[in-house]
Image: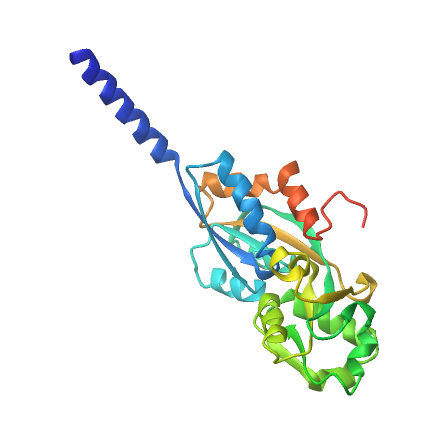
Length: 255
């Protein structure tokens, strides 16, 4: 009986040690990652079953402001590398800023054949409302503006723009009929949740600055081993394969 008690005590202590190593990671993630990162999360949890990921999706600019104001994020996955660099200058991140993907933008519509459109098509009088993520805080919105200007149709298109909080919100505006066309991330358009709902046209990346996306571990997450483990997992073959499936160009690939 005594031996059995010792075994039970030892087992309980072992469980205690295991649970002590389990950690929660709070992640601020760019909205274009909504579906791709959910798949990556599933793969990570298979190898780290004791760690819990709490991923909050939103515009990268708003997440930047929140972190600057002390929000308790452990890891920041930005759609624009410039935002983590701003945090680095302010001493709010640890380690190096690490690129994890390059994004692409597309025209997308549920009611029009966007695959036969170009940016010049947006100037048509038949198109009344065009949804883009708000360029004041959303990198994909910034690139949409750059591309429209580069195409030479800004003056005709700007009055038609409807500003969404994020690229998923821009898609919702089209689905609800509040816009006819949206500029979205390719990652959303390739997701099973959206792929069958409309058609799209890939906007040439020469028309805008690169959407170089990068992550940083914040000062808050400095001692969070699970945050570092998840960041490292993004470079693993299984995670990279998922990101490629959603249309991201990855570091080390020919662009």
